[in-house]
Length: 116
Image 1 (cartoon, rainbow, N blue to C red):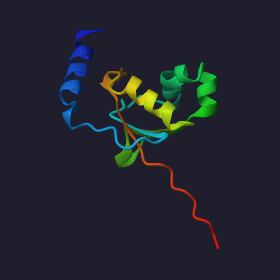
Image 2 (cartoon, one colour):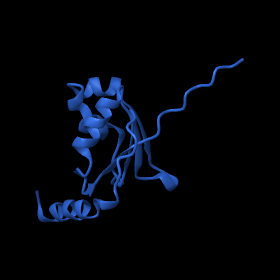
Image 3 (cartoon, one colour):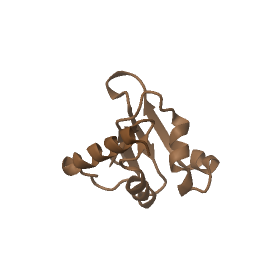
Image 4 (cartoon, rainbow, N blue to C red):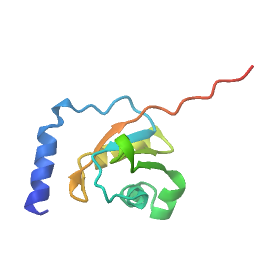
């Protein structure tokens, strides 16, 4: 790891005292993404949980924000809370494309209300 990336990782870890992962859910909220991150990068990062990148593509739902106020953020929905928890523990703070990514649990997708 080069010195610049090591410094970023140390800085991230030292400022982590205000970090909370949130309530477990199958949705991960990812922020502090580099400008050149693309959707396929998430399949690469989390592909090991599914055995291959192709399997990750069929099991993950990725929403990458590339414009407006939400730029540099993403929401990834996993099939289970346990997979999302493992992914958060593995990748939170990972320096990707020069920036340490920050991962928290997102809100559960809203349940549809039954119609009368």
